[in-house]
Image (cartoon, rainbow, N blue to C red; front, side, top):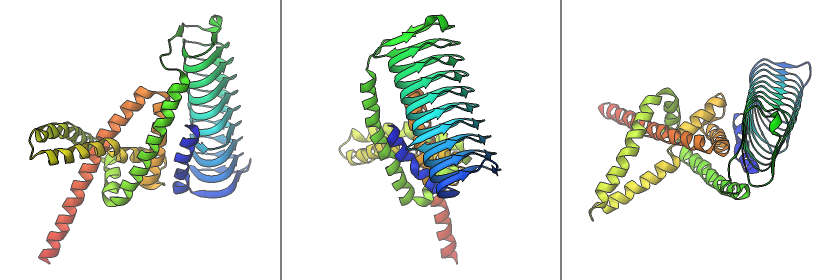
Length: 366
């Protein structure tokens, strides 16, 4: 899953990069006074970035300061021994925090070690988690093994194969463990809740890896649609952000009307071919109706520097992480994106058709 997400999201920085380099180094006395987006084999940030950092890299070492958020897509090591005043999000093989992150950490990694300080929540999908530092609020996620001798301000809510909690927890410890679990209740201010596991973690992980291949298909299919219907797609992405209520209303009406239309047509022999066409439209809508909305969200995060394709890739990667960490929230998010995006497709198509008909009328008059 981690490697797949890294490969999926890596093209984003290439599409949206302001700086591209084999080795990128920001010296200790250097200051970047705006958001920085870069793609590099190796990135080392020793200075100060007064804004957000978006980086696709083989490895990242951050010993300086970033006043905004850090979004990193890496197939190697990500080390933060400096200061991130905002949130840290992304993908890495090994993520190590010995410095401080002011807001949240949301990552997918093979290994995640937090020896520093996290101001708010730690939400992750990782093979191994170690928290020897301090997390201000909650620790959430899925891990093969999790060891928490550090301090957690609020709750620990995890699904694991093995768990060991010996540190101070300011709230509850809620866990689903398919293997051995040990919680020192004397350090837990709230309750310790052991929820029975219906599906072992390795099985649920295999199912999510299978879902990843569906994610690749969604991204590839979405890119093809953005290329084939470039004018409509560009309008749909723009309308998803500019006219949200119109898109939501039209999308909801369409999703309600299409099944009813299919049922009405399928009862007669003459209507069966049309019913099959409606069914095909429903399948395509369910699979790719969300593309404009997901692309719009990703594009907004990229500062509109990656185009619709870059926005789609980043948006899909973020949605995949959300679906892994919070499956229910991920399902809700996709449903909203589906209704919203489908309406954007239809509204953009109608506007494009109207413009072309108007241009044809003017041409005939001339």
